[in-house]
Length: 457
Image 1 (spheres, rainbow, N blue to C red):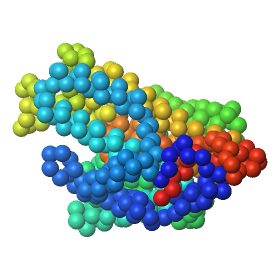
Image 2 (cartoon, rainbow, N blue to C red):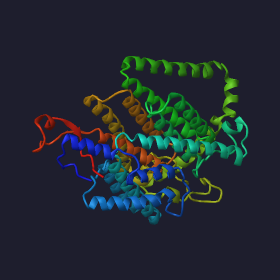
Image 3 (spheres, one colour):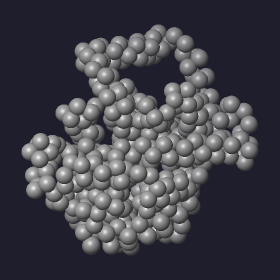
Image 4 (tube, one colour):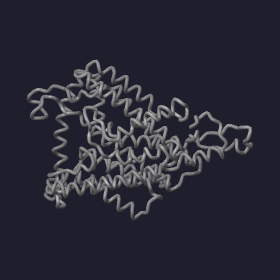
């Protein structure tokens, strides 16, 4: 592969882009294994390794060889934010109750970020990643079917109430945790929605319905809430990409808010349908939401007291090592606290305010890159309905992820990092630069704009 500094004629660059965008070359084969194995999450050992990590190690070794031989261009998004998080984490290690837990968390951080850098560097030269998104959607269908069938056949929930009710078994699919499964399936819905012009509408609706049923079967409150917020963001961005007037969008949003507030006032103030709503709450996921929120509130209260004692952080991975009093126990057979169950709170408690601000800055950068994809294509004259669907889906997926991080710690999920890599790679793919004039290039070719540095396999 060649670096960004290589002078290429437009014709040569176009040929390179064609080669880089093709399917199953060496990296394409790796990406196929990655998408297929990513949902199989059965933590192996203390280091929380999964099956896909074995392939990642081989891929990282190949990437290092290509990087040292200068045959691939290094892309390192969010480097500044990652460095600030590292600094904040090292400062917080001073207060760590369990230094080995902090060391393990830092090793995991380094591994995930290096893997993310490799993914961005590889995906940046593979076009719009249509094949990757199609493969992700196909595997998500398999995971959803496994989740539903497993809930019905293996766990015995054969009725509709057993699937959507607040009690009973929860679908996990190929994951070890139902919340992780719901997170993956929710993200997959937005990947499906990005395939507007690459998949028939009937097929998209069918797959979307399957994924939605599987999410309900996980009984994940955070997954349902984050999906709802993500869909709202998707709708707003999609409306803007089709040039829907901003005042009309604001009016529709205000109307929706007014209807919700009116319904709440009718119920709380006048008691309209109060009995029916109580029955709905007791026989739906809302009952589980009430119970779950009480448990998380207890955890967060304990962590808040810890934050007052150590405002710079207690060390990465140390939330579960806090010693509790007998009255404050969160588990019957353990005096240790539970994990923070929130990425933002975990960063604040474990790594300090500096790391939390860096995490929020990285999140802002991710949304900014989605906007970059749209604006660059608008300036290049290549923005169309397919681009609008892609941009809206990416914005919705990021919003879904940001909201779900309020109730679970998901920054170690492999599919989350793949989503970030897709966003950053698409932003790099749409970068435009002026081609350097060469001896063989005509003045017209020298004035042509082309995507930067398409690597040659």
